[in-house]
Length: 150
Image (cartoon, rainbow, N blue to C red; front, side, top):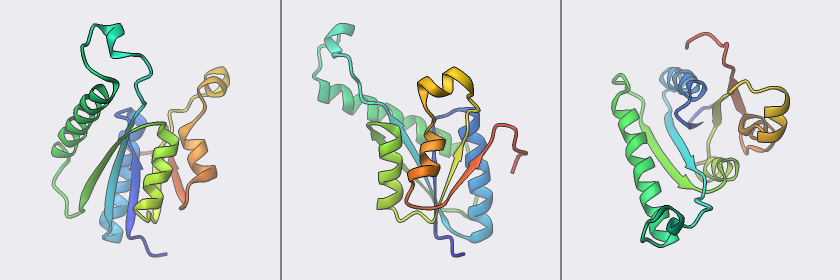
């Protein structure tokens, strides 16, 4: 197996952080690049509802800019490493954007955290990890919430 780029979908959850740590360890071992992908769901409510005097497009730009700053802040706090870490922040439906990014970046592997939802919450909310396993254009490693630290 030749790993060149590992994609990590990242939503600032504990599961995503654990997946990031696993991916970072793999990237160090395989000497490959890591792309952290954060997707913000498209705003569905008009900004006017919140008393904001901006267009939907302006709101999207603000949301994406804020998310990008938050991702960069996270990366700045990562212990220095030889791994090249890039970020990709998008607005849209998380699963679609994650798969699109994996395809565009020619990801060799996707490492995704699992929230561990079961029962009704899993049925109603779905699972980005599960959909990733089924539809990603590359192999997927799911890091469960009970997985040991990397």
